[in-house]
Amino acid sequence: MPPRAPLPQLVVRTHDPGRVRIAFGLIALLWAFSLVVVWRLGAESSAPGFGELRVLQARSSAELDRATEELDGLKDRVVVLERSEQVSRAANESLQETLRQREGEIASLRADIAFFERLVGGGAPRQPLAINAFALRPIGDSRGYAFALTLTQNLKKAAVTSGGVDIAVDGVQRGVLRSLTLGELTQRRQTVPIPFSFKYFQRLEGNLILPDKFTANRVRLVVKSSTGEQASKSVAWSEALANGEKNDVRQ
Image (tube, rainbow, N blue to C red):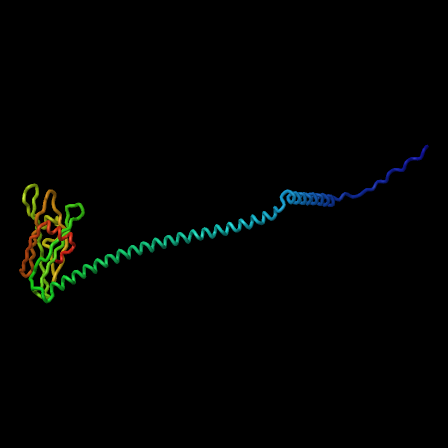
């Protein structure tokens, strides 16, 4: 019988699961690293400078954010300046209006002083209670008229003269002559007669309202003092309107 081939020798080793896991982990890491290397190489070869572009993009985004913030700040400043300009313009207009009013008051006071000097000057004649001037002005397109009446006296120096003024208007209404009293002309919204109290002169103002279909021809004025002095004057309606257009009732 031929000799038998020797049997192979078997090596028995213990199975270590931990070493297997470590080996698989190393293989996975090497595979992932190779993918990263391949992607980087591909990116560099297909788009050289891509990394620099990302840096530039980040810088541009930061600059855009800063520019946007500056623009918003400038817009806020513009709004504040516009509001300040509006406030300044309104204040300037108000100041100009106040100045115009004060100039008008000063002009009126100067006219009063000039009139007073003429009245009490050395060459002025001594006069008792008198009606110096009467003027009318229409109030818009209504039937109303504003009047101004100036009373004077320089006979009693530094003495107060007081009393009342009555006004009547003569005219025609529907073909009939009529004489309207102050109560009818003011619709009882004004004290009748109009009171006065002054030393040298006084300007009285008020309103008259003519009824419909009434055409005024003449104004009659009667002034009575508390001491019995009396003065009267008749003024044509057209003359009173002309005095109002002159804007000077201190003649």
